[in-house]
Image 1 (cartoon, protein in one colour):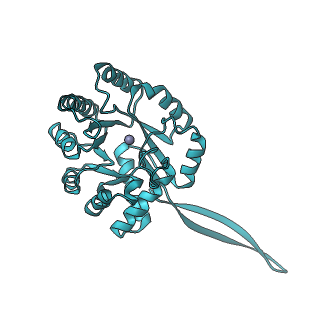
Image 2: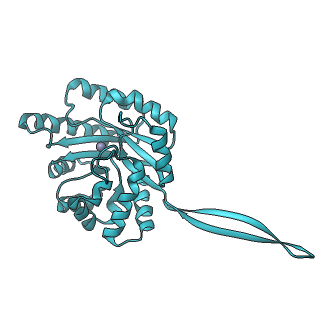
Image 3: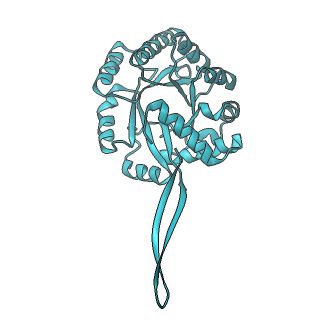
Length: 280
Ligand SMILES: [Zn+2]
């Protein structure tokens, strides 16, 4: 939520005979955004304290980090303890990790921590081309959705090259609390899902992605959140992405929708805060 920072001060104004106290009060805008999807456990973040400092300076009020391999849970717990109340966790399973063992380990992970959501989980038809493997992937995705629905947890969904299919699966499972992250499907399909209350998080790569720009044009701001997907999807191709770049998403959304930047930030932060039950 964009909040007013209230700065109050009193100045002494003196003349030859008397001292007058003149109360002085001013208000300034502060950006407060939530990066709803990043991977802070990624090995490339060897300079995490600096990355977090820059994020705070850039107006990022909270980060939702996502693990996609249960083996990363100990590292995530350590980071969460270090940045309590600032970094929040979603526990997921990479769509390419389809073994029984990984799924069992994912379920154990959910018991161990109480994440703000489940994800990212989903389908990946970019890396997985084999129809048989895609079937197993869908079975796992359905299992993950059922876990989220039964626990009343929001879902963060990965759907690379499988946007329409992932939405069909979600609809058929009756999933309601859904955030489609970095959705690369058709803008029309996104709009259909948004009508059911699904959210779409817009990565900073929107600055150079025609498909993301089209989606932003079509969707209402009420269905949009902001993400970086750090360390990937950088606004500058080839560079490591980080949460401080969230402002790129906000600015581009404001430009495309011809909205005030602060209004974009306020609405997307409120959407994220309600969705993940993160207090701001
Ligand atoms: Zn991701």
